[in-house]
Amino acid sequence: MTVTVPSKVNVHLAVGPARDDGYHELTTVFQALSLTDTVTVSVAEESSMHVAGEGEKIVPRDERNLAWRAVDVLAEHLDTTPAELGPVRIALEKGIPVAGGMAGGSADAAGALLALSTLWKLDLSRDELTRLAGKLGSDVPFSLVGGTALGTGRGEELLPVLTRHTFHWVLAFAQRGLSTPRVYQELDRLRDVGDPPSAVGDHDVVIEALASGDPHRLAELIGNDLQIAAVSLRPELRRTLRAGVEAGALAGLVSGSGPTCAFLCEDAESAVQVSARLSGAGVCRTVRVASGPVPGARVVEPDGGPSGGEPPWDPRPPQAHA
Ligand SMILES: C[C@@](CO)(OP(=O)(O)O)[C@H](O)COP(=O)(O)OP(=O)(O)OC[C@H]1O[C@@H](n2ccc(N)nc2=O)[C@H](O)[C@@H]1O
Ligand SMILES: Nc1ncnc2c1ncn2[C@@H]1O[C@H](COP(=O)(O)OP(=O)(O)O)[C@@H](O)[C@H]1O
Image (cartoon, rainbow, N blue to C red):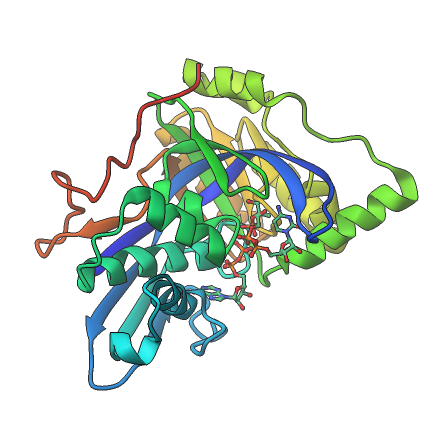
């Protein structure tokens, strides 16, 4: 059973103060991108985890891996144990950079939830799966749902956003990842010492720009409160962000907690040009082109394509905005 899962960029990320539970209240607009991970699960003699691709040497293969935690969450939901569910082999094919602010671990968690519940014929509703996803991490529900969505709460409460148009992105991967909690802490520290104003405006205008399909309009509005914290921890990101715009992108921002930088481009052709120029600028490890929005976690049919006809739910649910 194979599932493909998208990465994400936060087109807009407004971070509120820290809550009593340690999480920050967010208002964010997620967009799922065509850069994906693939999760394959099968019944096996004994449980094992295999990782290939991006960050294969650093991704944990034990119970710290979010895909394993999906087994625990499913077992808990069924009021049983992982041992009772039986051994499984989980194989991750990673295209999403590890600790890159693009929700790679969340993608694998969402993919494992969908793949295992399909393999074990658990017949879970979309709402149940999304609720279980929220237990695995704030970004995991979005990895399941995909498309474009407004996220509130700690990012797990989602409302779909209308986007009929495709946007084209160039992604600059950094040499090393950044820890998400570390970046939130750094933002708190910066706010404590200097109270920097929120870098981002209102999410409504971002949603309108997405609905318009005009990348120039969107480029004026993309923003991320975590960017100053990521740049504070990795000052070299300033150069990367500048280089993307010099290479012809309309605008750039740090994706989520970083350090991946995402550059919005005019169209597909421009994205290829920007990626070629950025590759030559020596400001990042790797450059990728991606587009969005794309659907969330989807079962891949044996012929290799994603299941178009009968996904367990409509990956592009009715639109609530704009
Ligand atoms: C920053 C964002 C933006 O979408 O993405 P990434 O950059 O990680 O991809 C997310 O908020 C990351 O979500 P996710 O990676 O699922 O985080 P979680 O596992 O839920 O939380 C990890 C830690 O991040 C911090 N955290 C997370 C979410 C939130 N709303 N406030 C927080 O302060 C907390 O310190 C928490 O212990
Ligand atoms: N399946 C997984 N893929 C990548 N990282 C994972 C996975 N499971 C657990 N992790 C851990 O989660 C951390 C954050 O990874 P990731 O989700 O890729 O980053 P981000 O939160 O920045 O989007 C990594 O440093 C890694 O130790």
